[in-house]
View (spheres, rainbow, N blue to C red):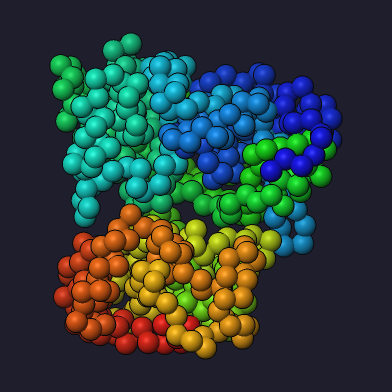
Length: 518
């Protein structure tokens, strides 16, 4: 909430900001050359920062038009500020803040559908990027193809007007078809979501939409896409917590003007991209992005070590009464868990990526940064979509090799524990890691361990929450619960591994009592 009478950040107030805190480029000199879907904090703290630096260092006018798929709150706020905003980097000892100017337009996907389609058809736009989460790709459960049975996709395919399309997959397909019909300039479409083979997955669902459409020229669109549209794989990494009112006040104090939409992040950021673009792109390598022929070693390292550890810490931390990742690292077991899980998973990683030991050392340092208040509820939400990618590949490889999997079993048990419905309650006398009884207030103002009456026990949300809750209500015993939960996630093979199920179920009593044993 705005509490200051200071003017808002805008092109007109840039001269009120200290020169070293202003954008690295003059936004008025940039042109719409990149379209981005997903006007969230992560994009503004990651790809937009790389793009601004690329434009500044190359002298090329790489500007971004960002499209919000659903909510237009940020669109309206960004427009008021001429699409300027600030990024604060929270170092352990200090915070640095500066304004970013690479976004030159903000659109609502439905409200501004015609303009979005015009941009996707514009030969001057040569890159489209996406941060729409795993769920936004609408893949069939357990497969890579488009889930044409999903209500949103089915509605888009039946839409009489392109303005009525509500999914990014549908909007991309329509926009690319318009591009082909307008001359067919090459374009690269870059998924920046945490999925293995995200480029191939995105290409598959977009082509699936075209194939399922009733367009008379759909075959011509598909043939053109095969030669003129690239879907390079990428890995993105930066911890970007949700912005708080305190962050807004800090941005105001640093800039001397009011920023309604600041973002905060850790100092670390990484971007690895498959070097297979169809046309011109921003020279992101000038700001440290890495272009490689094969991103798989980097992708699996990030998914299995960073994202895998993050999910494990979220569910174990929730059981122990913690609120943030940094809280978990202050327990006696947090660092041990990260190192144990990384050591267990490392043999499943292909050669050619980062050194797992060095990568894990960096993870521990990043997770300990108390200025990054990354909430466990945020990380732990949508677990049914996240953990198969983060844990199951490594788990299957290790089980096939008859290797021990104690850390992954503990993580799986913690996730299972967190799927309990909100009314499942806690045993009396459970305490958080500092000895406080559950029910005392955490740093977010939420009681430790207080159930959310609308969802899961620790306040996480999940599209499969009802199915997961039913596993607890209908199971004969704890092992049956684990089997049922794995079946919901499409992991029938793991559900049939008796030793895995028994080892996971055996850890539930301690977790239900709020104790983490590593």
